[in-house]
Length: 423
Image (cartoon, rainbow, N blue to C red):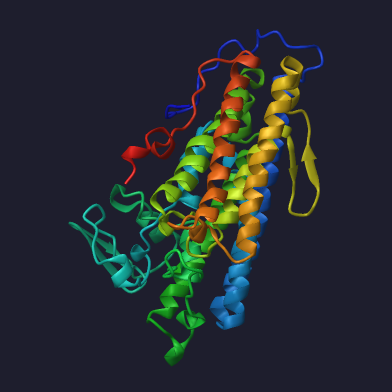
């Protein structure tokens, strides 16, 4: 199945006039719960990011093996709540336009800090800032532009983010922080994640790789900015927030389009294609989403779970409480009970396939090892996840006609649509 790229919110036609069974919830009720789940998810992401920020404060003030370990654990703990919100991208322009600030990937880490030259290289013709290393340099010369980097703060990071129009110049967000906590993963498709020493944040003569004070300033600025950006997005889904008001337009019909677009696009082009199948085709560890920490298995699982959450209209918060209410599943069931049953089964299958990758990682084989050339069993586990995502997208597409919508398209990926073009 081939899907086209979307350029914005898809057009909605006919939903209000579609014949719905009397037991079906109305679109407004579904969208209220959809927005409530978004607000809860982003609020949880704020809370876990604040916990990460506190751990980073401790690492910078009291650098040690233990404080670095705690900061890494806090980063990993911050990911599940955020990843479950990624289904709100694509169909919601306010989210898609903002997302790059917090979860942009992949990144050219040489923009930020020192790298292994043998593995990373010294230049990239597409990116003049490939090895700019802002931590080591108080002044950056990028082409004809000179940037004052003497003070590392949020303003500087935002100026550097996607510098020169290059998307790989990722200066902010989860993955910039991840790199600063783990460093490069130099293990290829072998076991092991990044292994940055805690002494990269040490004081005085104990400092390794130089500029430990500036490295701490960068890490703190990135952490503060992550909390700020997530807080802003949570506010957009609160009562009166722009994102909530947008999905309630047209008595909720605009939101139904956004929800289906987000489910299909994340499932197919983004998660199934760009984040999973591409790495499998290339057998390339650099195509692991959380590549420095070897946490990709968890990120993929929680993305899949997020798709299931919005369809079922149910989200379990980090404190164990549950947000639930009228759902797209209820609406589909009122129109086509067999389709609803089919979608539920397929969503469960993709979550189970994601859990199987988590189980493999917990047993010592992480995503970058699973996609390695010659690892037939690991490759098969990843392919099963891809197949489940592609299969569920076919059923998600059928929702459109089942509830009387038109004009919805999903994000595509060459890795699925045209594998011969991938190199």
